[in-house]
Image 1 (cartoon, one colour):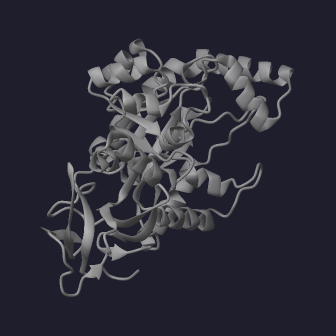
Image 2: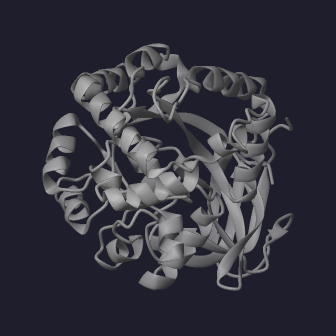
Image 3: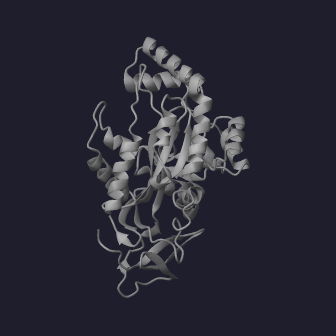
Amino acid sequence: MPMTCDVILGNATLVLPGEVVTGALRVVAGRIAAIDTGAGVPAGAIDCGGDMVMPGLIELHTDNLERHIRPRPNVDWPHATAILAHDGELASTGITTVFDAMRVGSIPSGKRQYEPYARQLASELLQLLDLGVLRISHYLHLRAEICSETLAAEMAAFGPEDRVRIVSLMDHTPGARQFRDIGKLRQYVQGKYGFSDAEFDIHVAELRALRARHGDRHEATALAEAQRFGAVLASHDDTTAGQVVASQGHGVRLAEFPTTIEAAAACHDTGIAVMMGAPNLIRGGSHSGNVAARDLADAGLLDILSSDYVPSALLSGALMLGDLWGDPARGIACVTAAPADAAGLPDRGRLQIGARADLIRVQRVAGTGAVRGVWVAGRRVA
């Protein structure tokens, strides 16, 4: 890959912490070396023509890599090709740091089967990262499926050297959390997998039996393994204030996709950051019938956005929040500074002297943003 080079971005709308100003930004040796306000284009600078320049976007939870390795049912795409395509896609949307979500905890028996895949995929991703062929920064986010058969063995295969920085506690037991409305779960599963009514009922019974058999032990395992990795702990689909209290007791710092205003408010009361999906915000609601991200934004209960299953939604959602709040800097912070803080990455997420020069240049177009340049540690990657 090309070496880091110095760059000056001038005549830019700089999205600084808490404010937006016109000015220029200088990068030296992969770090932000100077920020100057005022109009004009310094000698040797790229003239941004008034485009926004902001920190690179930080994605804490995306299923996008899984989409690339499984582009169709029963198709296992070559992993190196999939990883490179995923990496390039994220770079093109302005994401400069990603926590690749991988499921640990499989169900190799029953009506709907899942085979273990995370250890092999992670090894392939880390190898490509070591070779220097990936454009952006990659960390691992292990989605610990409590309602499974193989969680303990799969997590034991990872160690502190594997860049596992987030572990989320996932409990997809039917009738709880994301799918507490069994009717919504039926609609989702039958639409995606073509189950008959009888097959769906068998599927629900099997998952509930798994939760009863393994749930408490798997939860304890996930908590211990997160501590072993030195990872941030996240909850998933908190629905009640009681669940949030339990999350706080576990040491959770990040709540992914709480399903109710009650749970989101309880997270704020206990100092847990609330993350919602940008597709939920853009579409105007949750595909699972849970609380709308817009409602949490209006209530001041939304801290972080995730692209979830649409990488380009991260930038569009942040700009939408900025417009909604009348505060562009606040909207952009939901995809830069706030996720950096939640994930323990103090070197990025803000335009400030000494910060890592992960930068994107964005032109506002038709109510959204067109990415016109992406730099990772001062090196242009898109």
